Length: 207
Image (cartoon, rainbow, N blue to C red; front, side, top):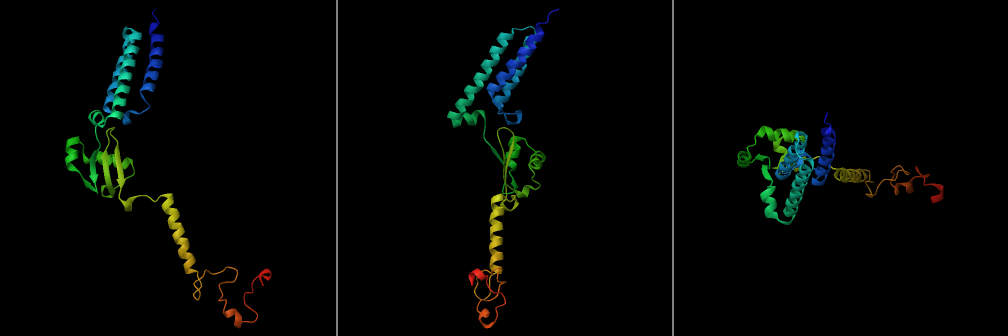
């Protein structure tokens, strides 16, 4: 019995893993059209040796496909025109809470599909969306309205500081406008002169 298919299968897995590692780490949802075409081509190509075709030629063709993809990506980095032609541009779906119906028709996309993607990002209302774009990799980019954005830690700390300042102002002495000392109980220091002995004498080391 011919057991060549065993080592061929193992070699295909190893070679395929290496080729995809060289091609990049992006997931299927993050791939551009060119990357998807190359990956599908490599997947179809790598299975052919099990049907009797030359395994080394198959791996060589796969390597050429990956190198072609890398050259295309390099050219896209150097030229915006080539990048626009191969990868495409982001398309506006929502602008200030209003759907861009023209782009929906061009993209053959439904509002239900947009709502599904918005729900996945925790957005419950289209009216809360300032901008929504369909990116070349198929993902939807979202920027919320100012009133719908969650509070950041920096904003929370600023609010906390403002509240503390307000508390200090409310606790200030009515006569002098100065913060109340917790040690003296907030007594007016001028009234201490008429009181004998003082209601709240200062500490002995400060007398």
